[in-house]
Amino acid sequence: MLIAVILTVAALWFAATVFAPLACALLIIALVWPLQARLERSIPRAVALIICILLILAVFGAFGTIVVWAFGRVIRWLIAEAPRFQMLYTEAMAWLEARGITLAGIWSDYFSVSQVLRTLQNVSGRLNSMATFWLIVFVYVILGLMEVDEFTRRARALDNQRLGTILVGGSRETAFKLRRYMLVRTLMSVITGLIVFGFVRFMGLGFAVEWGVIAFALNYIPFLGPFLATLFPTVFAMVQLETWQSVIWLFVGLNLVQSVIGSYFEPRVSGNALALSPVVVLFSVFLWAFLWGIFGAFIGVPITIAVVAFCAQDPSSRWLAELLGAPPRREWT
Image 1 (cartoon, rainbow, N blue to C red):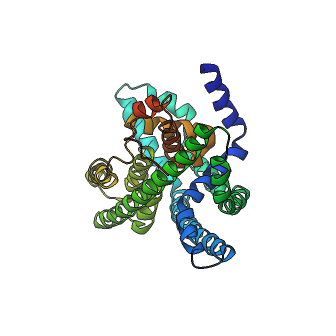
Image 2: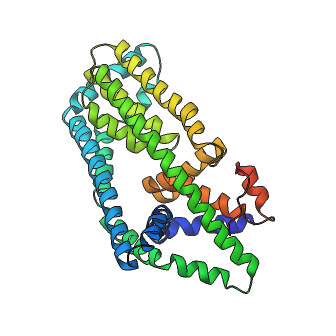
Image 3: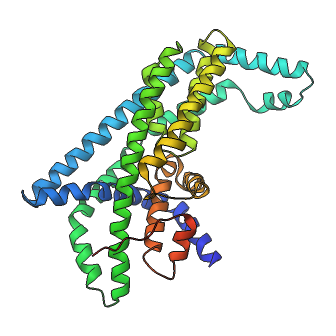
């Protein structure tokens, strides 16, 4: 069993260029299919498919445009202000060395602000070079939307009725949970982005709109995203704000926003439909980020939701779904 798990993880890592677009396409199909099914009741299937594809392109185009714009603006500013960050870093190392903390010297050998900026430039470049990935996703989505009904018929026609029931029930349960998850995540991300925008502007920090957009985008990544959405503006504030007290207040305020929304409002909005153990959520983010990079961090939790939904369909694997925190199973007909 352990060997099979290790081999599966290794295969997902080696074949990331195949499986990552497929996973993304399945997520999009789960989100869009109810709209297409409703449209097909009143208009031809081909027209419904075209409308759904255009809607997908519009949503992803708008999302990608504002995110690239926000990150691009901030990164260009960081590059322009690199000497000031290098000065702050040098002063911090001198302050540590004056107090006998030799670790500062070790860090100096392996870290510099210019290296961080080069890393940011590389990340920005990779974000702008994913055309092939999204083209593959686009093809998968078109073909998948055309095959949903056919897949359901084939699954129900299997000689192994138990397997067919698991496939159909698991697919519908997964689609239901993914739509709920993305709706809640989008709502909470929008609220977080608006509050971050208002708070950053109140604190007098520049690029308030950009930080709001970045917080909105990063909040799609549980745990890690909110942390980065708090860390980035704080580093920015070290150069722009006049006092360290203001920097600390900014950091505390942003953490408070993320904590209240993530720990109080989001669980109450989502209810128990998405009840996953926090450890499982965090592990999913890091595991899939390790396997598939930035995209894996975004889609790690949806993949885990799908695994739990399918495990809940069969008595022999339902214990795993319950262990991971799944709510009671719904019956699909």
